[in-house]
Length: 346
Image 1 (cartoon, helix red, strand yellow):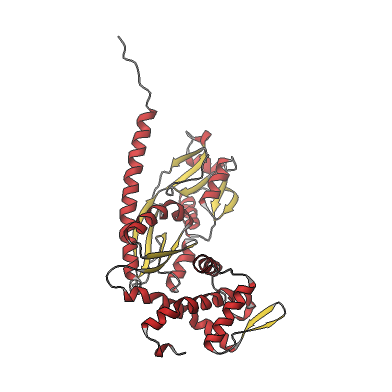
Image 2 (cartoon, helix red, strand yellow; image 1 turned 90 degrees about the horizontal axis):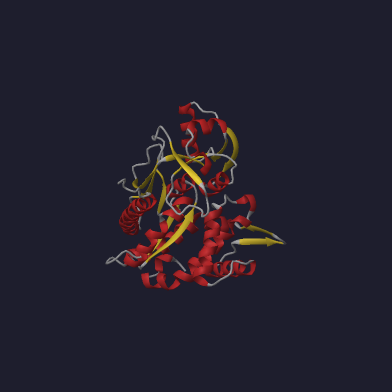
């Protein structure tokens, strides 16, 4: 059946079955071995999870085979060949893979294009690990109340991965640290939160000099090839400090727990709470704060889902402003409670 012969109502009627079949075919791409360049694993796994949640279909081998059979029946050609436990795509299958994501995107855009009165449809959003727990809950809570017709699909990753996914059109928007280089003119970026670089150390080191700790204690750093890891390395070089590296980890949360256990000290950005519970840490300010980071939203200006992106940005600005005000009030209240009253001498 040719798409050119379908009306909008026909496309909407076939959207669920056809798009789910294509989605399963894309998600099965990691079974094709080296014949096909694989999609990022997070996106493949996310595709399975979304299908499970929305369609109630298991991504088992039988479920995958059933959906691919449905897609083959719809198109009228074989897409994969099976030989024992091995699966490889046919020539038609390779051609379909090159177009499948574009077809899915077009089907996804139908609702956004059809409904002009209010933002509606699916927003594919990327977010770094710390922003997923520290920023998104409040934003998504307000978004669900303000724009209930927007469905958000979240992909988690580091800044470099998410930035590349934005450029390749796999994401509509992403919350990432501001890149150290100029982004292409077709994209916009707006700051949501600024975070200072701090030294995190065991609570017993509260009154010690941060540079002395970096020079003497074991050092736990974020991955060197990550954007945050490069900022940390830049600070160490400018300060002329060569720490005794002990571990190199992917997430701030894991680093904070290691520091709490007395395994070393770390440079990290003071990310939005919550932090892991039960930690006893010192957050020591550093002499030079130019290595802080700015978290913000990046998106393509020409995206079909630009109305969804703008709605998300509008809600994010309101939600984070309210959270910042609440945090300041809580901090002041905590400081007042910690003050010990003194008796007046007679």
